[in-house]
Length: 470
Image (tube, rainbow, N blue to C red; front, side):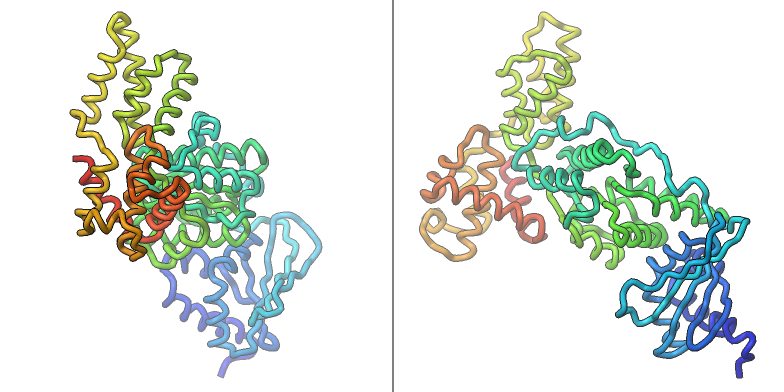
């Protein structure tokens, strides 16, 4: 039988024994060992925690585990209170749970104490940090096209009201050089411009993982690490696919929960869709899908040309349109290669000012993309799609509404729009079954949406694009 004077200690020890079997040892040592039982009266267990931040994080990350454990040890009527000892002197206050439906009626009692506890971090209340954003990656320097229109629109909404839109988190994915980092940082820069008081941080997935690993083996440093991230208002994590490892993912899961539940904005980038991420915990993947996932596609000809003109303006150089049109028509894969060719052209033309620009740019382009491949035409796209799906050309241009035929036409329209320069929607529609431009636009939007949600469909399009490139 429990000693009445030490009943609260026995109850909490029983709870710790259960919790220890559920969570990782490092998390258990950081967030549960510092907690001390104070009293147990009328089914209410009172726990002492080192700081109000500690209490807030404990509830945010482990409330469900606490509920389950207390019910198991105490019974269905279990209640929970906290005693928190902050740095500054203040009158005692009691905070009750906001939701009356919460099974465990918990309250927080704040007592006065002159000495700070070991888990109180003076100066982190209003952290001042370098957001690590590149001023060149702003919205003004981001050229909008069909490839990124949805992402830019969502990013603009987020920058107007960070943490208060349905786009939280915003998950941006796509291949290399398509502008993921630029868009993510543009959001951060815009927020910083509109809300200077907010704490914005850009970090890569690999950097977060390294910081976590450095903090694990140093006493109290892991708590400092998590406390720091929980003070961020806008967290931008680039290349989230590099965040591998159960320890770092568990720490990030807790940071994610805390920030999201407190209305903070989260922006992630990845080279693949959430559904395609490997070696990630399912609970983390499900959170990546909470908000909006946006795929950045390959820029079309007009977007590529506009990007080149914009970069020339920023560099203060005047390059003839015929040269820019050649680059836009030859470099089709991503913005990074476009910029590489343009910067190389500027450098070489400075060294050899008498050499014709077209000759210089032809040599540069050949070194980057190799010999020019056969041009993609509407007829080539149609033949390739028909062969891939084993559909006759007669069925393809017919008025059939069979799902496989309609879908193959939509894919062909999407590919024509993205891989054929200066080809209007009306022309594409006319050549692919006598459709109008509105039908082509609808088809392109449908394919874009399906590619962002359906892995098999995305592979269809990727396979056909690869065939067209040869």
